[in-house]
Amino acid sequence: MKKTVMIKKNYEFRGILTRGVCARGFLLDIFVKKNNKNINELGIAVSKKAGNSVKRNKIKRLIRENYRILEEKLNVGNSMIILWKKKADFENFNFYDVKKDCENLFNRLNIL
Image (tube, rainbow, N blue to C red; front, side):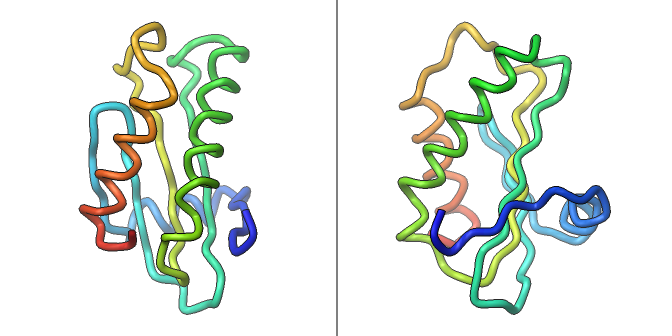
């Protein structure tokens, strides 16, 4: 993540979730807001309803890896929040499903 800073503060998450543009996919919801900086900001959130800590951390690792692969193609100057859908089944997805969903949502938001 060369041009990306992680978002960790609750007020930063709330600002993007309330004022950002949303795109919804099968597994993920992505909220994007312009930040007028030369870097991207990324936040990842997975609800406790998605499973235990092992499952949640695996989901976050898959999302981070997919973002890392797509990072070079993304436009700079955006703050993004990637949310895992609570209803998405943990057992029936893999790396390529997450990648396909990420690419489709980034294309829909015109940042890829």
